[in-house]
Length: 122
Image (tube, rainbow, N blue to C red):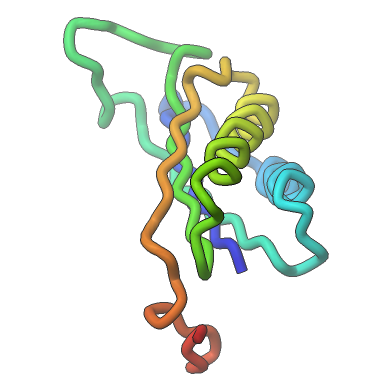
């Protein structure tokens, strides 16, 4: 099930190609050891004009990428920590950014609150 929302902060002239989205889906599926059609990736860009860090002007490769991961159930903490590191590396590689600029957030588990085609994940 994992649904991965990726929000890169980008220059207004930058676009994310369909090829990039597919590359991210493959890289993330490899990290999660997920079969075809099991990982869903959505990308929504954040314009660099709509992002700031206090007292630290940033641009280019320093711009962050925010990743939100929705699993049906959370992996145990030790597995989640390893997964976050691996996801950060995969996303950083795809975007050409430093792994330190990729920030992973885990959404509350989807079981009991997410429905696919009207069928609640239980």
